[in-house]
Image (cartoon, rainbow, N blue to C red; front, side, top):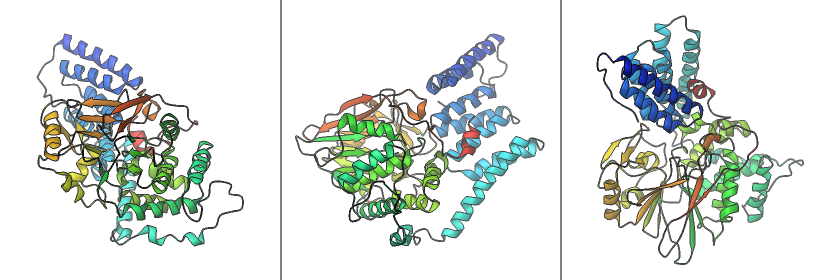
Length: 490
């Protein structure tokens, strides 16, 4: 975790040597992509020698890899305080700012480096690249006028799109998703083939139309003897998504599913994941549910690959339409009035009720605080009370916060996702806060299992199924991500 250690004056030779040993060991774990252990060891190095900027910068990039953007920002800033000329620390802080969508603050870091080191060509190049992003975003805002008035779905002319004779992929039947269509689509995608753009646009338009009629908190009823499955993050890992259906059966009216956000980004088969999931949503609207995650947002999609993937496989207009659709995804689901499911977690205030969630106006990009933000971004912590988020957005909440929320709202437990877990799931807060993460070997590097939860409607007792990653075509994760971010995180 991040630290606020202050310089303590002279450090003994023994402490300096011990710190270097911890740092060297941490570097080895970092190379193996075991970032949690690396962070623990860098923290020990810092305890022995809190005056060394390198240790903070190294811990910063480890936190970046774990998406702990808040901690990464704090560590990079501390490194800069200790060594104002330490270029890498500015790059780490810029990467953290960019990951949080704060591009202008990232630009300031690059600008500072170029002024201090005017002959540094690398710094100049990064400043220019970041400046391009800032200008592009400003241009997009300028031409969008009022985004509430710009409705991309209504501007799509499906009639003008022709299906070429050579197209041999799945086809909608009378403009509708059928079981035949989605079955063929999944096979089509396994062969790395593309759905025709006319059908892709039609699915998006129909999903948006459906989601617009849904509340921000969706109530789900599961019969006493009926099974219900909850899945966590998928993150563009299409072949692992297919494995879930092999292990647990295809979605159907008798095999309902809830996918709890972060369907896209990071993994490079996000288009395949989202169209498969949206197709099932249209096929079984009352038995297939999807929550919004923090990666169903414009800033995340811009940095972590989804927007680049859609633009590469289709068009930037379709990428804009996805943003429009994601704004209407529900923020939470409540199963039998007893289990609340959201992507991130609980709240910075004590008095939040289910009705407060129902009242949230969700048709927008998430704000930096408040109910919508925290549902998408918050994380549990083992200690009592609340803490600032390690991610720089949302909050961290303790077992007392969970217990009070459950009691106030008459709930049994909560399910959330949002965090990689070694077994694909984790029980916390006296088993009242369950994390489920369904992307095994996340980003082809983390070595974690994926998991899903099954339960019946009678007792809602959670049962966990863990599984390993399956092989996928040789397309690396982050293949479509913003190359500038990858460059900053080297």
